[in-house]
Length: 313
Image (cartoon, rainbow, N blue to C red; front, side, top):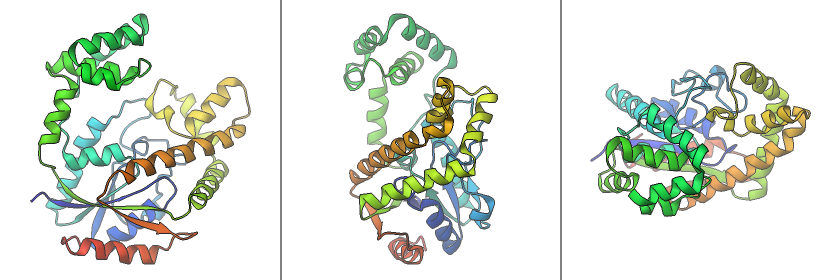
């Protein structure tokens, strides 16, 4: 049977970090972050990265591991997180995977084989060809070798079109073939997923709005300015993070960056909606729904009882 891990997930601003820390303390565990933006250094406020005080002595992994001008992908995450989880298990502790990036979590659980991480030179060449020829031409090129992938993609989806062609050129297999092989393989880990949210959508959105207000109060605008001064631009993945993108765009337009607050709130609410849709498609999720505000004592009890029958407590 695959090794067992616990997962705390859910949409943004639902208390995942706090419950993950409580659960890790209760189970003699360590937290493995599953947040695609908390991996970046110098991005603390806008990613709601836990502070040392909030960590309360619990060891956290995969925070602050790359610079914001570096590329970081699900492929790298699977490699890094797998190494962390296996090390935690080898030391007799419990891995608690905490975060809202569902793609990262599911790829980790499946053990998605991303040995085909690709080739930087090939990627850059294809990217330049996309810019020169356009999305329609590159999509037609992809359809000649991988029609199934081409049907799933829009001509404007440069990143995925380039990635699919890169994988084929580097490995000799299409991304569809790689995906099918992954589906047939047994999962690397057996996971129990616990998802947090609010029973009423209005309460979730209100919590998100309050969090954004607090981020601006704590200095999110200055954090974005620092990244821009470091040379981080819209072409870097890190600057596509919610909060950073909207403020950077406001600065580029010559607007007051503080005026981007409502746009950040809207983007955050839309992201939460997408996170909920993604999680609701998974029948194996154990939901804990808050009534107006979080009740972490109750959530910890529910979580430990849920994990008890598989030996994670």
